[in-house]
Length: 273
Image (cartoon, rainbow, N blue to C red; front, side, top):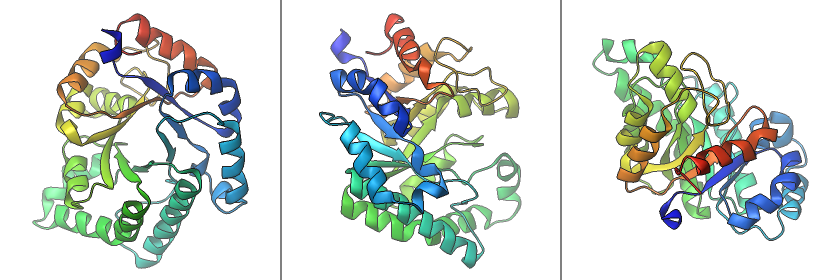
């Protein structure tokens, strides 16, 4: 029975790699390197940074990805000058993917709580958002296709679980997929009236490529280890089993000293291995 359970991995920063190396390699667990969210990493010695990361991961053969840049970088940029900045940062993230051999890059959803109430105020609101996303992302999507990487769109404020899925599908590319951050979905459910977290999994279905596993209280973005909050993990993993998807499942915690604690809780509950 254990072999049918999904495998839990982790989202980690460079200093965390060595201390979690044995655990990652023992199960060849999914790994996401997160340092590329920082401008100083992207604009620094990117090649040297990636060589360092790979050296710390000698023997690792699991599914490797990165968290792409997102600070002040709207995927639906209307202003062409802002759009050029976003395109440059996406390109730098893909530079890192190519150097590492990484096959996923997380990007942040353009959908907001405000947008949920206002996108349909005009007949073209949703179409314009899609158009601006395509103008911003088209070059990155083509490059991702060429290097065997998938851009996975993570929910942030998303109140409608389906909108992001439709955005991913609109590219008609295997290089664009759907990501779910469980804690973000729980925040949206508890604080903005969004559906329960398992509905996000059902909405993504087979398009679900990536999950940030973190527990929360439905009020804020806590990034606690599973079991420390009140998220309904049984409903979440039941929906995942029905989805026919094989997403990368990575613990994304505020305290990476608790990675093994979070994994152990899910394993003890019979939800993962």
